[in-house]
Length: 385
Image (cartoon, rainbow, N blue to C red):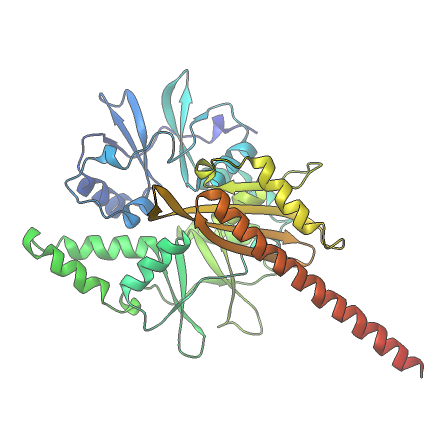
């Protein structure tokens, strides 16, 4: 299936010279997946602005939209004849929910993650949530401030945080949309002279003032199809995963990106590796990343890796011009999910730090498995006495 039948010419567009204040208002009023930036009356494509960019940016409202619209880095440029599976991979690796679609080198329209999920919805009943959800979840305490929430979202490059009470039970969820809606709504009430003080006041407010509750949850044994239907019907980007026995305990998160990633799994001779933030790679090639992970996982012969996702995230801090990079490697294996995270100046340093952590975690899983096998052998021998 290609994207010619699901791409659309219905999209939100602004001129490259438009103020970012207008772009923020568009996200508040229309809640698009992204805003297309053009010039010359829409004839020239300049890039895409996403909600996540606006949240992580300190740029003033009077700044031109073109400042955030990077035509090569924000979203992959697609053609109408591309395969849906390939497009799913490009959206995941580009870390975006929207991409422009071109025909004969001219902007034709857009495709979003929702377009893809709606097209394949009936084929998702064979997958369960447990097979693809993210288990290692970043959370925030109920007494955290809005400023803490924003920093945690930026630090981990994620779009949602489960909110936990003092007992560790789920009480709410806060998303980038919640924050943008809250900040935009309150800033509109203030004058320009009051804005700085108003923003500082909002950053000190408790997360309870922003979070959504009650939380819509799913269970690991639910089908991905039912989970995606819930997300599409309610315009959720993700759902919190809990278990039947502990409905208030967070077991994981399932996002639309997780589903897109599953759609793009391949049956290749070598390990299937997806890289988010691939534009940050310099000395490393995709093949180097794959080979490094394979060398680590080969140390545990009983470990079968179904899929590997490597994510690079750039921080603002720099050392002699080289940015501080966070790298996270997540493996989906027959022994469950295994991850490793590391930071360093430059993508290659961050990757090797993450790889070292991954190796320790793989060997820990191997040790646990060996202990379990030993205990089983011991019990069998005791049973024979």
